[in-house]
Length: 162
Image (cartoon, rainbow, N blue to C red; front, side, top):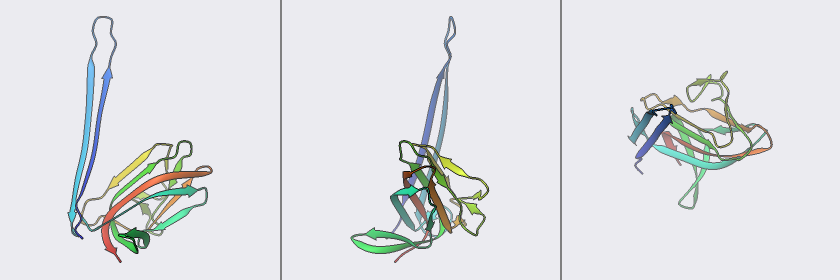
């Protein structure tokens, strides 16, 4: 099964000043696009894993080398060796989502473990590492700040589906 992924982020912000006689408009565009083809080099990937999940205040560790999935009605395991893209969106209306690091590797998606990342309700996170090296897959940790928290996650990278 060949992989082809198109990642697009587009921001267009408009600011209008309100003067007595005149108004000015300032437009700020920012765009990010990434295409990943099938393979193991720069700008390439082999597998995608996605899920809608619920985190509690207890840490949930996802071992990226052994992620359960269902494909075409069959139970499979997605095993990442390198991660090229991480997307997380907190879909909960009131609880924040804490994201932690790749265990034993000193980083989570390129960020040092000492950096904590908390997504507020409705918040999102996108990280890409399209180089041939990507980011070595390890364990990603998720927890709700309070109660429980729902979130969507998409991982794209190199690895296998068995």
